[in-house]
Amino acid sequence: MRFLAPPTDLNVGGKIHGGAVMKWIDEAAYICAAGWSGRYCVTVYVGGIRFYQPIHAGDLVEIHAQLAYTGTTSMHIAVDVRASNPQKLRFTQTTHCIIIFVALDENGRPVPVPKWHPRTEQEKALEKYVVRLMELRKAIEAEMKPHLGEPSEDQPAAGREAGVQ
Ligand SMILES: CC(C)(COP(=O)(O)OP(=O)(O)OC[C@H]1O[C@@H](n2cnc3c(N)ncnc32)[C@H](O)[C@@H]1OP(=O)(O)O)[C@@H](O)C(=O)NCCC(=O)NCCS
Image (cartoon, rainbow, N blue to C red; front, top):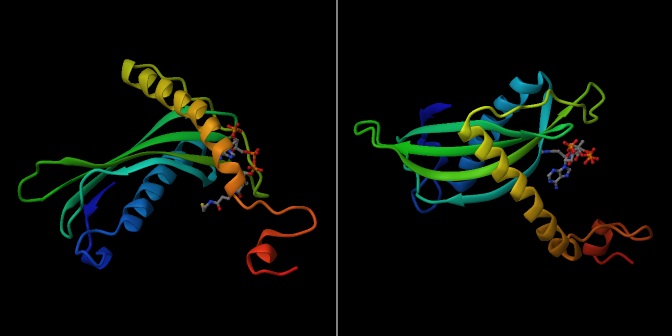
C-alpha cells in the first residue's frame, strides 16, 4: 500500500498516531491474507510491533506485507512500514511487525488455507524467523496467562472486574 499520511491522523505530539499505523498494518496484512486464502480473514495476533521512527503528516507511506508462513488455518505475515518526505524520496523504515490472520468459512469458523512454500533464500529465512517467533511466543504466553483474567466457571471476568459477587 502506498499513500500520503493524512493530517487527520496526528496525535497530540503532532506526529502520526501509533494507532493509525497499526490500522494500516492490519489493512495491508488483510489484503495479503484474503488474497492468499480467497476468504474473509480476521486478525488473531499482532506481535513484536516496534516504532523505530515517527511518521509525519504528508509523508509518503509504503506498507509491505509478505506471507511468511502458513499453518492449517493461519497465515503469518511480515509487515514493514517505510516513510519518506515525497519531495526527497529517501525512505526510512518506521515499523516492523508480524501479524497473524485466520481464514474463516461462511459460518465464521477457521478454514484451511493453501500451503505457502517459500522458494527464495529471503522467503526461507523469513519462514525460519516466524517459526522461531512461534516457539518464543509459547514461553511469553505462559508468562502472560496468569494476567489474562480468564473467566472461571462460576464467575465471568466482566463480573469480577466490576466487583460483582
Ligand atoms: C479467529 C477465531 C474464530 C479462531 O477461533 P479459535 O477457537 O481460536 O480457533 P483455533 O483454536 O482453531 O485457532 C485457529 C488458528 O489460530 C491460531 N491461533 C489461535 N490463537 C493464537 C495466538 N494467540 N497466536 C497465534 N496464533 C493463534 C491457531 O494456531 C490456529 O492456527 P492453525 O490452524 O494454523 O494452527 C477466534 O479466535 C476469533 O474470533 N478471534 C477474534 C478475531 C477478531 O475479532 N479479530 C479482530 C478484528 S478482525
